[in-house]
Image: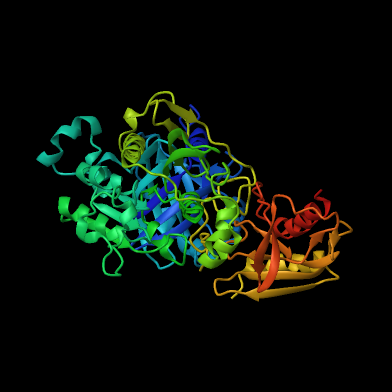
Length: 469
Length: 129
């Protein structure tokens, strides 16, 4: 079995599973996970959309030898629900272990006896099993293409991301490198995770370009970069890594921003893997390239980029931060008055921090996104001018976003005991910071677990919204 | 090809405005422009009937239907200029038009909501004093 399966949970689902499996007794308990799924290269990512607990003695019965079995009616009901929603079926139970767990020989024999039949009943969808320890998970996943996969890693995707493995030996490791020596005491073993993590950055302008150098110097080496724009003279003051030769000249476009970013990354780490895409994340199939990212920084300022990236975070359980800076200048009758300079670092997680629920995706701007420039000019209503921007304010917001990411994803031991809210709002003139709890709508089409048609955890066969095909 | 969400809104509009002709001109991205004709504007306007139009974006159901348009020759019978948020001098679908700029702040993504917005905007315009 190859270790190519990933299992992703929302925190509330994981807590429910663990509370069901570990009740303070010394017994095994069971249930079924229904999961969205997508294949990525050799790997499969399962997003747990629903947990169906099995009732002891009714749905989950012990044999005279003491081996637990899910009952046929319970299995049939769960399979029917899985098929109806195009979800993978994963039967789960627990062992009385902590950070190391594996299937027993009896478990494996029962899989080999039963799963070929379940596969035929659930044609085209993965079926399998997971066994839990209190701090570990193992998976035996039977794919429609006859591959059989075990767990690479599991994640509980809350504001702090918890990483779980079948055992400590399966956690990513990195050989000692002197260049990272000073950060190792802070990371407490997180350097291996840094090496394995794929970072997506959407928007490589004044804010997104500031993320590159610190991330690659930390040791991140796998990047997906997306931006449709080319360097212009008016953004030369803010795009990190841009040099004079990148500017437009003789009627030619400037260098694509993602190419500037790629060049900068490779100048620091020539071995970095960089997928640089000159394109709009919200159009066509561009967003598919982000699906194999472990974390996304959304630094683009368009409503359509927010729409698609927010949807990706909710559908594929990809943790994300959305970052932005606003220099607020008000035009009075006499003069322009500086009202403040603000920054935002917004954590988006499956089921929480949704940009749609919090009114952060401008629907009128979405309506404009597919209109021609000429039509937009004709329909312009009120005064619109280019947003002011200053490189130093972008730097502060980028630094805050990276520190929040580092603590929440790589070094959760460094997270403050009392959370600072889903969104961090920065007053960049006074230096004050405010944490805000995001709201959530029960019928949100993106993040609501209570809405059966929401995108939350859905399989890749459900299209992620884009603004234009 | 017209997107399913846009098709649903068109279907709702044809029900909502049963006595009028609903003409859709598709663009290349899955959306297009729709014109409903005739619509009744009431006694505050001359002429008292006109057309109502808007762009149905391929970004539906998430995109707003914004702005809406009526005929550019529509004037107030009290002789006063059109107040905000109505502005003149626009064109829509090749016709001179008044633009009615009414954003939606709700998060309802159902096709009913997008179709209902035409009725609500028309009501707003009729009642505008």
